[in-house]
Image 1 (cartoon, rainbow, N blue to C red):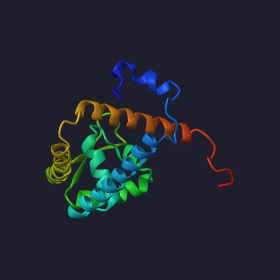
Image 2: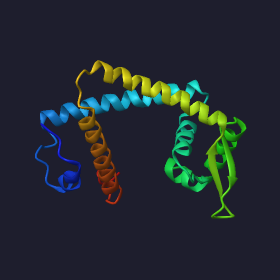
Image 3: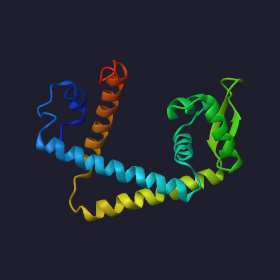
Amino acid sequence: MPLEAPAQTAAALDAPPRLSSDSPVVLDIARAMAGADTAHRRLRAVLSASVGLSGQEFNAVMLIEQGEHTTPKLLAQSLDITTGAVTAMTDRLVSAGLIERSPNPDDRRSLLLHLSDEGARACTVIYEQYTAALARVLDASGDLDTAAMTAFLERTERELDRTADAIEATPALLPGR
């Protein structure tokens, strides 16, 4: 089935689904995504250990690498940990030579976190391993429509985020828990 044009994507996500949650194709894709998620988490754990980081430190380094103006407060929110825990973690990452702190020009009370040269090298090694794995999959996939696949994954990301936001905004799914 061809994927919808990007302009129709937002409207399509708001429309009632044509497939039910127990449709065989939905269940097959959900199982495949769960398997990919498990493998992805394992790869992240192995990659973090390979550069001497805990899983949480790895996540912090990746978030700092992706952000232009990462503050300790923003990092704490992104990792869902306390600012005190971020302070201890960033102390370790600074001591390890992976990140640096600098004054925040927009807020004298805050700092900006950014990768050191060593941190950037660690991210490069990590990304090279990750993208090499993806390249092997794509090479073995023949005439895969990568544009359609990329669009599908991007729409999936948005819908999963939207679903998570909706769940966070409602009472517990299982009353009494």
